Length: 385
Ligand SMILES: Nc1ncnc2c1ncn2[C@@H]1O[C@H](COP(=O)(O)OP(=O)(O)OP(=O)(O)O)[C@@H](O)[C@H]1O
Ligand SMILES: [Mg+2]
Image (cartoon, rainbow, N blue to C red; front, side, top):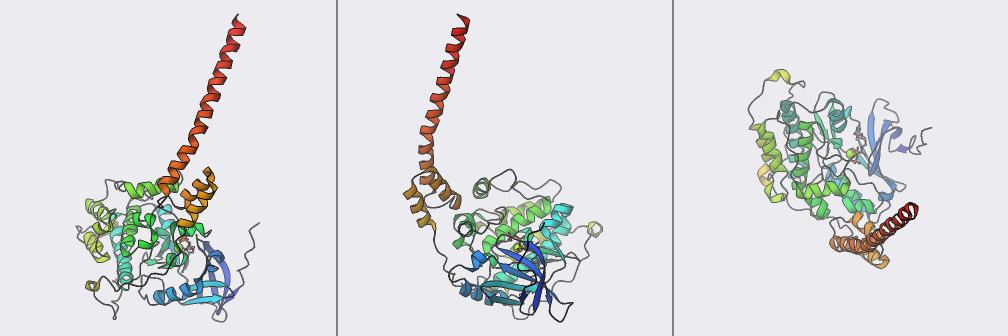
C-alpha cells in the first residue's frame, strides 16, 4: 500500500496539492491546482522539514528568494512565489510539461552531436544570464534540466543547493546528498569556494553525458568516495569516437581541475561549440527554434565578473566532527568523520588512525590462521601414524 502523504490536499496560497510529482534529496515536488482557476497548474517544491528547521533558514530562504525571483529568462523556470507557512518552506513554479533530461537520456540514449550542440547552446544561454546576475546554480545535472515537449530545455533549481548547504554539510543535516557525478573538484574540497566556474565544470560533465548517453561514473559499482577521488585526480573518460573532436576539446577545457583553466564564462563555452562545422539538418529530430528574446535590462557579457554577493554564513562542522572522532578514538568514530569529510583538514590523520587500529586485527587473524594450520598438521600426523 502506498504511504500516506500528509501534504496531499494541503493548501498553499491559492493552490491545493493534488499529486506528488517526485522526491529529490532535499525536497519533494507536488502538482498544485489553483482553487478557482482549475486549469492553472503549478509545481510546488517543499523543502525537507529537517532543512527547514535549521537555524536562520527562514532568513536565508527569503534572501535567496529575492535573488532567484530576479532571474527572468525563458530557459530558466520562473519562480512564482516563495512561501513560509507553519514551519514549511515552499517554492511555487509553473508546472512544466516535459521530461527531466536524466530520464530522457535513460530512455533514448545519447543525443546526436548536432542536436546536442543546439540543445546545449540554449542551456548555456540560461547559465550565462544567471551568471551575469551573479547567481551560480551549484547543482547542475541532467535531472535539473527539463526537456519540454518541443525539445527545448528549461533549467530548474537555480541556487536551491545554496539554501540547503552542499556535500558533507548536507549529509550532516540528515538530508540525502544528491549524486556526486557532476560535482566539481572544488565542490568536493570546500563547497564554500564554489562560484560560476563550478557550474561550468558541471555543465561539461552534463554535456559529456548528453553525448555519450551514460553518466561518466557508475554509482552502482563505485562508492561516492571512489567517485570523489576520480573527480579530483582523473580526467573524464574519452567520448565515443563517433563524436566530433571539438566536443572533446570543449569538455576538456570546461572540466579542467583548476577553475582558472576553464572557460572564463558560458559565452566562451558556447563559442567553442558554435565554431563547429555545420551539420546536415536531416538527422536533427528537433526543429530549430528562434533564439529566446534578448533581455532588455541585461548588462553585456563583458560586465563579467559581477559584483560579488555576500556569502551566506554556513557553519563549519568539520572541527566539531573531528573532536567527536577524537573523543571516541575508535574505528567507527574515524569512519564517521571520513564519510562526512573525505577531504577534510584531518582526513589524512583519520586514515592513519584507522590503519593503525586495523593492524592488531590483521595480526590476530594471522595468528588464528597459523594456529589452525598447526592443528590441521597435528591431526594429519595423528591419523597417519
Ligand atoms: N516545475 C516543474 N514542473 C514539473 N516537474 C517538476 C518541476 N520541478 C521539478 N519537477 C520534477 O520533480 C521531481 C523532483 O525534483 P527535485 O528537484 O526535488 O529532485 P531531483 O532534481 O530529481 O533530485 P535532487 O534533489 O538530487 O536535485 C523531478 O522529477 C523533477 O523533474
Ligand atoms: Mg532538482
